[in-house]
Length: 235
Image (cartoon, rainbow, N blue to C red; front, top):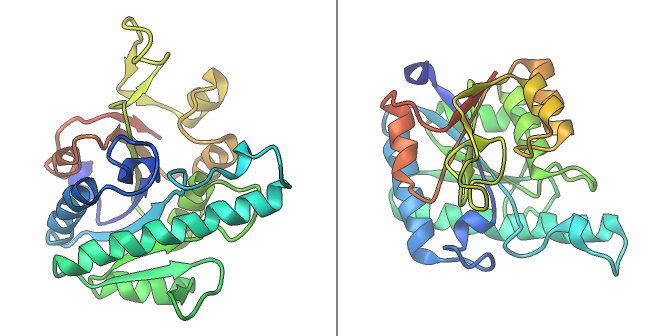
């Protein structure tokens, strides 16, 4: 199946760019991830990236301000991450476009579906920033939404600190069982916190497969496209 991935959405958390610190940006980590993305793009795979903003701000974690304002702050954090990824990818010789769901023309293009598709067809990497542009929706939901819009073959979810989906936290419970394959209904019924329920339902309704893998070792990205059994597949 992996060899048939021709157009993918790569979902990266903000924390994945922080080099294990949980906040801010780590140049070495980002360059390592970007070098693998470039390697995949050279295999004629069309790549779009949805990046989170948790290394700066998590909208739902605020107790002092209203949720809409808090989510807007988080969306702006994702734009910082998108621009940082773009800088590394272009330094490595791959044309990259950032498209944002909140208009900020001096910084990036507005998200326009047909333009995004044109960029992908021309071999450019497209990074979607500012989430969906709407409060109360996570960047997981953005990944599902954009995957449906651009007709992606799969959403690759790079997780930090874990190499797939388990029935319990493997960092706490050494007996936690890893799943090789799951269905969307399993995710919802078992309450497995891979994506929020809105994102999972959107993937289920549009029949978009997910592959959850560990991004702590960015080489896993290459292994997926080499056809190795990596992480957990949900369909």
